[in-house]
Length: 248
Image: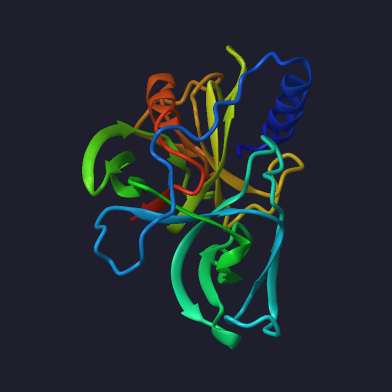
Protein backbone atom coordinates (compact mmCIF):
# COMPACT_ATOMS: atom_id res chain seq x y z
CA UNK A 1 0.00 0.00 0.00
CA UNK A 2 1.01 3.67 -0.12
CA UNK A 3 4.22 4.65 1.60
CA UNK A 4 4.04 4.97 5.40
CA UNK A 5 0.43 3.78 5.49
CA UNK A 6 0.70 -0.02 5.23
CA UNK A 7 2.14 -0.32 8.71
CA UNK A 8 -0.51 1.95 10.25
CA UNK A 9 -3.19 0.05 8.37
CA UNK A 10 -1.94 -3.31 9.72
CA UNK A 11 -1.64 -2.02 13.28
CA UNK A 12 -5.13 -0.56 13.12
CA UNK A 13 -6.56 -3.77 11.73
CA UNK A 14 -5.04 -5.88 14.49
CA UNK A 15 -6.36 -3.43 17.07
CA UNK A 16 -9.80 -3.55 15.50
CA UNK A 17 -9.81 -7.33 15.73
CA UNK A 18 -8.85 -7.24 19.41
CA UNK A 19 -11.61 -4.81 20.41
CA UNK A 20 -14.17 -5.97 17.83
CA UNK A 21 -14.53 -2.43 16.60
CA UNK A 22 -14.51 -3.34 12.94
CA UNK A 23 -16.43 -6.16 11.37
CA UNK A 24 -14.81 -8.37 8.80
CA UNK A 25 -17.25 -9.52 6.19
CA UNK A 26 -16.60 -13.09 5.08
CA UNK A 27 -16.89 -14.52 1.62
CA UNK A 28 -20.34 -13.57 0.32
CA UNK A 29 -22.84 -14.95 -2.11
CA UNK A 30 -20.82 -15.68 -5.18
CA UNK A 31 -18.60 -18.45 -3.85
CA UNK A 32 -19.91 -21.97 -4.42
CA UNK A 33 -18.22 -25.25 -3.62
CA UNK A 34 -17.77 -28.43 -5.63
CA UNK A 35 -16.85 -26.73 -8.87
CA UNK A 36 -17.41 -28.79 -12.03
CA UNK A 37 -14.59 -29.94 -14.27
CA UNK A 38 -12.30 -27.33 -15.79
CA UNK A 39 -13.22 -28.19 -19.35
CA UNK A 40 -14.01 -24.60 -20.24
CA UNK A 41 -17.76 -25.20 -20.49
CA UNK A 42 -18.53 -22.78 -17.63
CA UNK A 43 -17.66 -19.58 -19.44
CA UNK A 44 -17.13 -16.65 -17.09
CA UNK A 45 -16.56 -18.73 -13.96
CA UNK A 46 -13.22 -18.50 -12.18
CA UNK A 47 -12.09 -21.67 -10.41
CA UNK A 48 -10.65 -21.44 -6.92
CA UNK A 49 -9.05 -23.67 -4.30
CA UNK A 50 -9.93 -23.05 -0.65
CA UNK A 51 -7.06 -24.54 1.36
CA UNK A 52 -7.70 -27.22 3.97
CA UNK A 53 -4.19 -26.85 5.38
CA UNK A 54 -0.83 -25.22 4.70
CA UNK A 55 0.71 -26.36 1.42
CA UNK A 56 4.05 -26.44 -0.34
CA UNK A 57 3.65 -25.19 -3.90
CA UNK A 58 5.91 -27.06 -6.30
CA UNK A 59 7.38 -26.37 -9.72
CA UNK A 60 5.78 -29.49 -11.27
CA UNK A 61 2.88 -31.82 -10.39
CA UNK A 62 5.00 -34.12 -8.25
CA UNK A 63 5.77 -34.35 -4.51
CA UNK A 64 9.51 -34.40 -5.29
CA UNK A 65 9.51 -31.31 -7.53
CA UNK A 66 11.28 -28.15 -6.37
CA UNK A 67 9.37 -26.10 -3.82
CA UNK A 68 8.19 -22.73 -5.15
CA UNK A 69 6.53 -21.39 -2.00
CA UNK A 70 4.84 -22.38 1.24
CA UNK A 71 1.29 -21.07 1.64
CA UNK A 72 -0.38 -20.89 5.05
CA UNK A 73 -3.96 -22.09 5.52
CA UNK A 74 -4.96 -18.75 7.07
CA UNK A 75 -4.52 -15.26 5.64
CA UNK A 76 -2.23 -13.00 7.72
CA UNK A 77 -4.63 -10.18 8.63
CA UNK A 78 -8.22 -11.43 8.57
CA UNK A 79 -7.37 -15.04 9.52
CA UNK A 80 -9.71 -16.37 6.86
CA UNK A 81 -9.06 -19.46 4.76
CA UNK A 82 -6.50 -18.88 2.01
CA UNK A 83 -8.03 -19.07 -1.46
CA UNK A 84 -5.90 -19.55 -4.58
CA UNK A 85 -7.01 -19.27 -8.22
CA UNK A 86 -6.83 -22.49 -10.22
CA UNK A 87 -5.04 -22.07 -13.55
CA UNK A 88 -4.79 -25.67 -14.74
CA UNK A 89 -4.72 -29.31 -13.70
CA UNK A 90 -2.63 -32.41 -14.33
CA UNK A 91 -2.31 -36.00 -13.24
CA UNK A 92 0.73 -36.67 -11.10
CA UNK A 93 2.40 -39.83 -9.81
CA UNK A 94 0.05 -42.66 -8.83
CA UNK A 95 -2.78 -40.92 -10.63
CA UNK A 96 -3.12 -38.10 -8.10
CA UNK A 97 -4.87 -34.93 -9.27
CA UNK A 98 -2.71 -31.80 -9.11
CA UNK A 99 -3.76 -28.19 -9.64
CA UNK A 100 -1.71 -25.31 -10.96
CA UNK A 101 -2.48 -22.26 -8.83
CA UNK A 102 -1.56 -18.59 -8.58
CA UNK A 103 0.85 -17.74 -5.78
CA UNK A 104 0.81 -14.45 -3.81
CA UNK A 105 4.57 -13.89 -3.95
CA UNK A 106 7.32 -12.15 -5.82
CA UNK A 107 7.96 -12.16 -8.71
CA UNK A 108 4.51 -11.17 -9.89
CA UNK A 109 2.78 -13.90 -11.82
CA UNK A 110 4.35 -16.77 -9.87
CA UNK A 111 2.45 -20.05 -10.20
CA UNK A 112 3.00 -23.60 -9.03
CA UNK A 113 1.41 -26.97 -8.35
CA UNK A 114 -0.42 -28.38 -5.33
CA UNK A 115 -2.34 -31.58 -4.71
CA UNK A 116 -6.05 -31.10 -5.36
CA UNK A 117 -6.72 -32.84 -2.05
CA UNK A 118 -5.09 -29.88 -0.27
CA UNK A 119 -8.28 -27.87 -0.61
CA UNK A 120 -11.89 -27.61 -1.67
CA UNK A 121 -12.57 -26.52 -5.23
CA UNK A 122 -14.94 -23.58 -5.65
CA UNK A 123 -15.84 -20.93 -8.19
CA UNK A 124 -16.79 -17.28 -8.49
CA UNK A 125 -18.25 -15.41 -11.46
CA UNK A 126 -16.58 -12.10 -10.54
CA UNK A 127 -13.54 -10.54 -12.22
CA UNK A 128 -12.04 -7.08 -11.69
CA UNK A 129 -10.28 -5.53 -14.69
CA UNK A 130 -8.17 -2.41 -14.18
CA UNK A 131 -7.58 -0.45 -17.39
CA UNK A 132 -4.52 1.61 -16.64
CA UNK A 133 -4.73 3.86 -19.69
CA UNK A 134 -8.33 4.80 -18.83
CA UNK A 135 -7.79 4.98 -15.06
CA UNK A 136 -10.89 2.85 -14.71
CA UNK A 137 -12.00 -0.37 -13.03
CA UNK A 138 -14.43 -2.64 -14.84
CA UNK A 139 -16.19 -5.29 -12.77
CA UNK A 140 -17.54 -8.31 -14.61
CA UNK A 141 -19.91 -11.05 -13.48
CA UNK A 142 -19.82 -14.20 -15.61
CA UNK A 143 -18.18 -12.19 -18.38
CA UNK A 144 -20.74 -9.37 -18.38
CA UNK A 145 -19.94 -5.84 -17.26
CA UNK A 146 -21.73 -5.04 -14.01
CA UNK A 147 -20.05 -1.72 -13.13
CA UNK A 148 -17.37 0.77 -14.14
CA UNK A 149 -15.55 3.02 -11.69
CA UNK A 150 -12.88 5.72 -12.05
CA UNK A 151 -9.73 4.99 -10.05
CA UNK A 152 -6.47 6.51 -8.90
CA UNK A 153 -3.47 4.47 -10.06
CA UNK A 154 0.27 4.50 -9.48
CA UNK A 155 2.16 7.55 -10.65
CA UNK A 156 4.86 7.30 -13.33
CA UNK A 157 7.69 6.61 -10.86
CA UNK A 158 5.69 3.90 -9.02
CA UNK A 159 3.24 2.46 -11.56
CA UNK A 160 0.55 -0.07 -10.77
CA UNK A 161 2.01 -3.35 -12.08
CA UNK A 162 0.50 -5.01 -15.12
CA UNK A 163 -0.58 -8.63 -15.05
CA UNK A 164 -3.09 -11.16 -13.74
CA UNK A 165 -3.45 -11.16 -9.96
CA UNK A 166 -6.11 -12.04 -7.40
CA UNK A 167 -7.67 -10.84 -4.16
CA UNK A 168 -5.88 -12.41 -1.20
CA UNK A 169 -8.08 -11.02 1.59
CA UNK A 170 -10.72 -8.37 2.28
CA UNK A 171 -10.46 -6.00 5.22
CA UNK A 172 -13.22 -3.85 6.68
CA UNK A 173 -11.70 -0.64 8.04
CA UNK A 174 -13.34 1.45 10.75
CA UNK A 175 -15.08 4.69 9.65
CA UNK A 176 -12.77 7.61 9.00
CA UNK A 177 -9.55 5.58 8.95
CA UNK A 178 -7.18 6.27 6.05
CA UNK A 179 -7.65 3.98 3.03
CA UNK A 180 -11.10 2.95 4.22
CA UNK A 181 -13.75 1.84 4.32
CA UNK A 182 -12.43 -1.34 2.67
CA UNK A 183 -9.09 -2.66 1.50
CA UNK A 184 -8.74 -5.64 -0.82
CA UNK A 185 -5.19 -6.92 -0.61
CA UNK A 186 -3.99 -8.58 -3.82
CA UNK A 187 -1.26 -10.94 -4.96
CA UNK A 188 0.47 -8.09 -6.81
CA UNK A 189 3.64 -6.41 -5.55
CA UNK A 190 5.22 -3.14 -6.60
CA UNK A 191 7.83 -3.50 -9.34
CA UNK A 192 9.65 -0.48 -7.89
CA UNK A 193 9.25 -0.44 -4.11
CA UNK A 194 10.22 -3.44 -2.04
CA UNK A 195 8.49 -2.09 1.05
CA UNK A 196 5.62 0.22 1.95
CA UNK A 197 6.25 1.59 5.44
CA UNK A 198 7.49 -1.75 6.76
CA UNK A 199 5.11 -3.88 4.67
CA UNK A 200 6.09 -6.10 1.72
CA UNK A 201 5.15 -3.67 -1.06
CA UNK A 202 1.80 -5.37 -1.61
CA UNK A 203 -0.71 -3.72 -3.94
CA UNK A 204 -4.30 -3.27 -2.77
CA UNK A 205 -7.60 -1.88 -3.95
CA UNK A 206 -8.80 0.49 -1.25
CA UNK A 207 -10.89 3.55 -0.52
CA UNK A 208 -10.06 7.22 -0.82
CA UNK A 209 -10.53 8.17 2.83
CA UNK A 210 -7.62 10.42 3.79
CA UNK A 211 -6.57 11.23 0.22
CA UNK A 212 -7.20 14.40 -1.79
CA UNK A 213 -6.05 13.20 -5.23
CA UNK A 214 -8.99 13.21 -7.68
CA UNK A 215 -10.24 9.98 -9.20
CA UNK A 216 -9.04 9.36 -12.74
CA UNK A 217 -5.42 10.34 -12.02
CA UNK A 218 -2.03 8.72 -11.53
CA UNK A 219 -1.02 9.61 -7.97
CA UNK A 220 -0.47 6.53 -5.77
CA UNK A 221 2.56 4.40 -4.99
CA UNK A 222 0.97 1.57 -6.96
CA UNK A 223 -2.26 0.87 -5.09
CA UNK A 224 -5.65 1.27 -6.74
CA UNK A 225 -7.93 3.79 -5.02
CA UNK A 226 -11.69 3.87 -5.52
CA UNK A 227 -14.44 6.04 -4.12
CA UNK A 228 -16.04 4.99 -0.85
CA UNK A 229 -19.19 3.89 -2.68
CA UNK A 230 -17.24 1.96 -5.35
CA UNK A 231 -14.94 0.00 -3.03
CA UNK A 232 -17.90 -0.83 -0.81
CA UNK A 233 -19.91 -2.08 -3.79
CA UNK A 234 -17.01 -4.29 -4.88
CA UNK A 235 -16.22 -5.60 -1.39
CA UNK A 236 -19.80 -6.72 -0.86
CA UNK A 237 -19.66 -8.87 -4.00
CA UNK A 238 -16.22 -10.34 -4.64
CA UNK A 239 -14.56 -13.08 -2.62
CA UNK A 240 -10.98 -13.99 -1.83
CA UNK A 241 -9.39 -15.49 -4.93
CA UNK A 242 -11.28 -13.21 -7.35
CA UNK A 243 -9.08 -12.36 -10.36
CA UNK A 244 -7.73 -8.82 -10.64
CA UNK A 245 -6.39 -8.15 -14.14
CA UNK A 246 -4.37 -4.96 -14.72
CA UNK A 247 -4.19 -4.00 -18.41
CA UNK A 248 -2.32 -1.23 -20.18
